[in-house]
Length: 569
Image: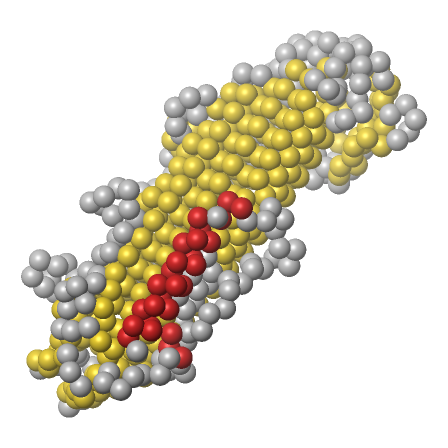
């Protein structure tokens, strides 16, 4: 029977690792329903009947009763020393299950267990090759700690479930973990969840793994004083990853909701996250209260509702190839210290200080609608003091120059600061980009330092004339900057060719007094009509650029063009 169980677990993990290895081949079209695709259904391990010869442990106020081999009772401690399946049931207010079975494989089958330990871990796995904790079908199980954890020998035991062996969770029952003095579940090697329902309330991390945390399925409700899901190995900086391919997650954390010291890979799952009290909260500048954080973040599928005091998604590098995101944050919507790559997905940033931020930003697909109180999309370098208005301090970026490149996708940007801001180069070769804002004269709808080039795509950017810039170079299509006078939010902006055909249009989400327009169909020698609210002008393109601006190279395309000026009829 034990061989059958572990063969099944091996096959499940093999299928998962294969799926993770090919995650980059996921369909580029996000699910239209906004829900993640369900993983393949496999029979629950808990549906396998207990075999004859398995050992049963019954807990009660009078102690622990054992039927079978492989376990020794010492007071209110059950010490498991051999490979086998152990059926745990009953209730004991101060007891402990210890697994000390070096090199062995052990299954703990929870079947209506309620176990608390006043000064330690009710389940303490000192040694084993692998331990599987299975929640029996239809059963509810509870593990809890009292008000403190006392050190035991050379181990700093600080979790309700504390394991120094590889740890696997499965089953179709439920497990409630309460840890008022420490962590919920701690694995000092790998931790894997296949199925089951889990509720964790902890003073510190909810679920913590040293080498890796892998979640294939399950239902998780976490309320934590520190991180919700935590992966970190201080002894080996190459370890500490988190991989999620399915599951339902409701996480309320006072620290980061999901935190991995190395890589985070998400290819499925439904996440409802509140970090640090949410976007309206103000925590200490030294606290990390991000929704999702890792050295490298890769997301290919999943549904994410994140409300965080700090960045909603934060990484050294962030790659998003799919998924549905609804983000509210007191700082950045999505932040990368180095590269942010967006090729697919549906992203709504309802509130943020800066919407998308990274040293190098590549956008080749997907849908983004964002609102920011400062820059909408910011490609920065070095130390950027704008992060969270200075509340969390300046963001630090990798070395090298900053760049923002847009080659595809649909972007709606409503910015209180610069709309598209590149502390380096801005390049647009495709996609549809619609920018509203800023309304204050100290920022511009487009803002770049080392050159702005457009070779394709549709760009309409309406903002303040005070720091306005046109592109510095246009190929394949023209680019126009015009001053419109004061116009209200909600008014339509459009450009028509000489035959009256609409080439591009948008409805401004903020008031404005200048507009940048570039799209296919604007050619040298053509005549075009630009309308913006009550403003209308007719333009003849004698160059690919018409109109300059306060901060950018002058347009040479029409009367009034030139550095510091606007194209005017």
